[in-house]
Amino acid sequence: MKLVLLAGIAVWASGTETALNRKALVMDLEERVKRLEEIVAQQAIGGLGQTVVASKFQLIDDAGKLLAEMKPTSQGVKLTLNDAEKKCQVSLSATNFGPVLRLDRFDSPGAISCWVGEKGEQCLRFHKDQNNSMRLESFGNFRTLMFSDDAGHARLWVQVNENGFPEIGLRDSCEGARAAIRGHDNGTYILSLGDKEGKACVGFQVDAAGNPDLYIRGNQGERKMMVSFDEQKRGMTLYDEHGRPRLIMALDANDQPHVMLANDEGKPRVSVSSDDENSGLRVYDSHEKVRLAVTVNADERPMVAVFDASETIRLRMTLLPDDSSTICLCNDQGRTDILLTIVKGSPQIVVIDQNSRPRAILSMIEGNPTLVFVDENGEPTFKAP
Image (tube, rainbow, N blue to C red; front, side, top):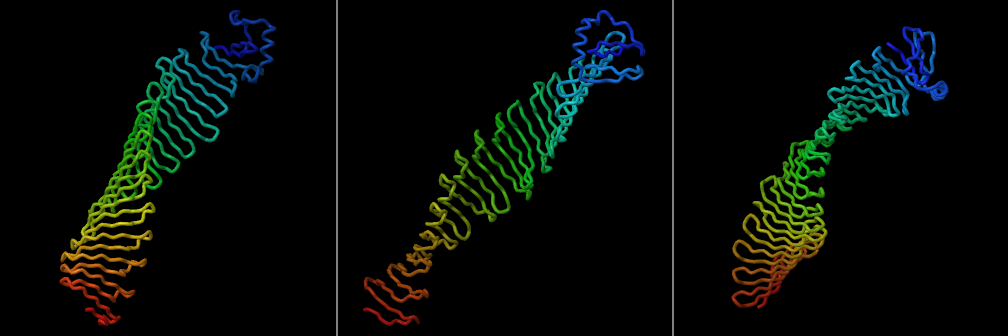
């Protein structure tokens, strides 16, 4: 067994200096002195009673095979251990970003390496043919386990994010995730299926209350369709190319259907609903205020209502169950001021005061016009003819 310190080219055996092997003497004294000036490490040789300055430390067996080596590098120091057959190797390095331990096996290409970074990050990697086949990493509050293919592309990973929620992802190449399951701090879990660029095309999510949603996205990541379920409604929303909702169809908590049409800003313009009490159509202005409503109530009485900008009713047209019809003209408080009605073929115009009492009635009965004025107590004060 020989102990070799290169740069000074000094060789010892059993603690006694021996003659240099001529084969090892490849430079003259002047060249050796020049190399000594470049020495960057100092090593004490135990048992020899000497301190020898060297830039490289090697342990070589009697067959001339390198078993161990320690040498400085541009970032620190590297220690390497080899077996006699050179089938495996252990190396320990001190680098700028932290210590690195690596185990290699050469007869069946594969290796394991681990390191600790300057910010406390930790990494354990399993290599095959110079590529990472599996990685276990810890960065801050993130924990990641990743599996790669033979080309080194990550294909499967399991991760716990900084909030303690898990994520599982699948890739079919070096592109983005094709499938992923993610947890969020609001208690929602999402399963997404993506294209080759990793943009989610189909997604399923369940919130903390157990309500599921399904959504479909376009090739630019914009939302195209969403189906949602909760205790209040079950519905489907269709989006335009900019991701704005344009059509919404839903069933409410009472299983009554509703449809809404939106403009290019995603604001409602028309809605249609059907329920046991009030079914109809509503038209909205650009400020999402109802301006027109066409409804049929529970007693099958159709009505058309017109509203002002503050959603106060100003005109109402109604067909009563006895087939009589009415038109109400309302003031800015929504109270009827003038009532036009046709009862059994006889038209009437009724003027109503602020207390909702009729005060003047103009009617046509069997072709004969009649005008009546009424006081606050409902007593006629004038009648003609």
